[in-house]
Picture 1: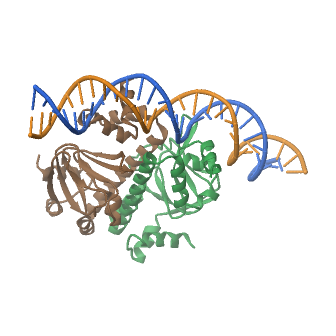
Picture 2: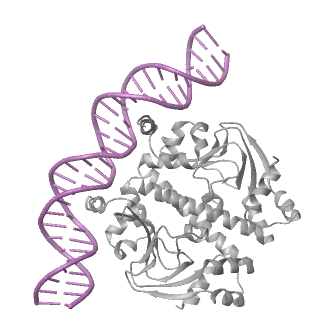
Picture 3: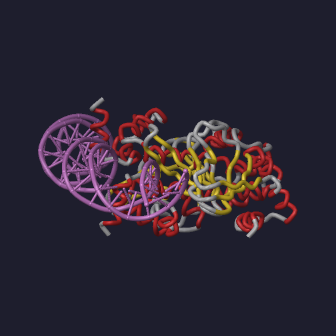
Length: 191
Length: 191
DNA sequence: ATAGCTACGTGATGTACATCACATTCTAAT
DNA sequence: ATTAGAATGTGATGTACATCACGTAGCTAT
């Protein structure tokens, strides 16, 4: 499927745009291709854009003391990703985003997003609901962190995203769960 | 300050409403008063509303196995609170919200919020940005959970909300930090 | 005032995890 | 095909926390 079709279908689930409105909306996106391992956002960068994933898988992560990596999000097709803290506050990136596989993404600048939200009420409606869902998911993950041990979080993750298990290396899954790769290895060898 | 003034000032930071628009917007809110200890949302309830805090302090919390409490949010004046998962998905509450002190809140139904967002573009703008900020805060807290030990999370919390230390009992602070009250006690007696 | 309840402190012990160390297997580049 | 590096498995040990147990101080209601 074409980039345009993928985005159109995605938006249509939440907002009603006319074809002309959507064409105009879409004209603000830039198509970008990255190879596995390439970096989209690096800590310290100025962050101007957010990204809609067409194909492949990215990770948004934080590195502590140049040693430990914590993964905030695996970004899969039809997901949005960026350093939203930096993007919304016009500050520098505190996280990194790079490509776990080859990737195609659509890029929308923060300035264009605000312009489009202002010009087209339904675009603002779309972004409101997208963030609503992100917020709820983030709260759920926080609760899971407080409430569950590593094994349960691991089982939850696999139930939610079964593709991940084969798509991404296990040490990245560990970094998402907030445990060491050794502990993760013992978790599933024990069962 | 009057309820209406407090809300108006709060909205004005994010959105531009005319006086007539704001009066209309405000007419959809209901003023509610609660005594310390009273419950606003109970697990299993139908959730119809979200709440804007005028005075006092509430807690949004989850209880696991009828034993352990985890606090998702302390809601202070000019903060919004609800079970957003339930409210957005029209499902039953999975968390509880009750009053740590006597409380005054403004209540807005989900149906009215959607109606107002639809009728007044700037209202939708306001709610988009409110959730943007909530999402970023939630991501930051998640990162802090993965990245920091109990002592550092404790120091972070005090730096961010110094009032909390004297306002709420320590076992609630422990429940927010995701540690036992004993561990919290040892944390600050050790320093 | 007294009784009962809630908040809070502190020692002893248990446990889920991290860390370190090293072996093995897989993958990618030349 | 060979080799280097990345990913993975697994034992030994350390540690930050939870849990249990018991104590005291402070509120609140009668």
